[in-house]
Amino acid sequence: MPGYYRPREMPGSRRPPHILLLCGCLALLSVASAVAIVLPVELGLGGHFAILTKSGVTNVPIGNVVGDVGTSPITFAAITGFALSADATNMFATSAQITGRVYAADFAPPTPAMMTLAIYSLERAYTDAAGRATSSDATLNLKGGLIGGTTFTAGVYTWDTGASVASDITLSGSVDDVFIFQIAGNLLAGSAVKVLLVADGSGHGTPWASNIIWQVAGYVSVGTTAHLEGVILVKTHCAMNAGSSINGRVLAQTAVTLGDSATITQSTSIRLHAPVLHGAVFAPTGSQLILTFVCQPTDRGEMAGVGPCALVLAAATVATIRGGGT
Image (cartoon, rainbow, N blue to C red; front, side, top):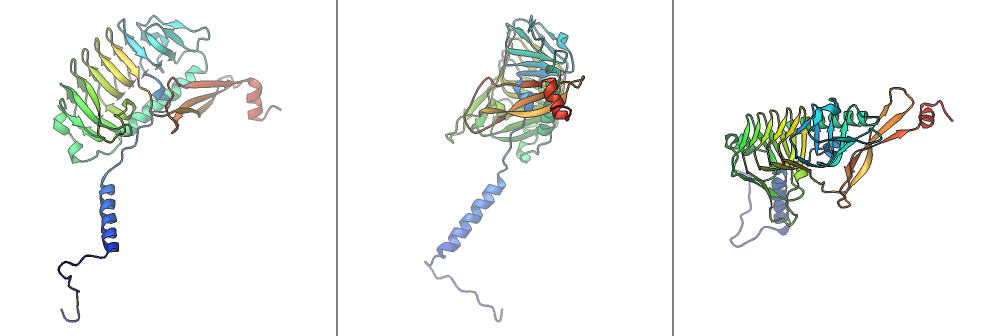
């Protein structure tokens, strides 16, 4: 073209270093932008229960729960098979089959307010997990839901129907990786199958159960002696058959049943959890203010055994807050 001149690159010549650096940066930026980071699902107060339900828990002795158990709005009577003993305060109960406490909506204050907030957190977490975008076309309806024998890496996996685990599956990653499984139907884990957690070679450990979310719109059935890892967020109920186990949590919007020797162990979180004010509710009489606290992650290491708690302010303090005291 007249008036157009393009310099010719001589054989053996090299592009200037700043051009190479720019090209390299653009390439890295392109790769980085193509990798979608999956953020954890915030469980809030609901995350401080091994089992949390709206409609109760049925246990076929002897089941085993490591962590707290809670139910609301259904009452204490809907938690059966644990031989529960109410504490003298009537704020919680205990059982030889539960390493933790049992809370229900009809216990003494501040437990009812705490349980209302816990159920709210459960519902919010379910909605959050269900609303996450599928990572890619490859993670949509993988294997038609017949996922036995599959190795998963971090991401959001979606099935328009149910998912069935007929043989062991593997989750490969590190402590920072998040796995979200969105299942529009039921989740069925066959007898003796296992979810295996393996390191991905990054040097940052294996995936944490607290970062594995099973969001199930139907129901969950865990087969005899099967073992799952992760947090079960189920729209209806979860059935743990005899000898089955879960390392994580079961947060169900209806009920949970435990067969003989079934075990649910509340998985620890990856970080130290510092108490943070979660809500404030005036008691019906108006003379007490109930403050509920949850534990939020910090980056200072790990501490086990931190659970939900509540503080009831005295009448005089409440009067001062309302502006009627000195």
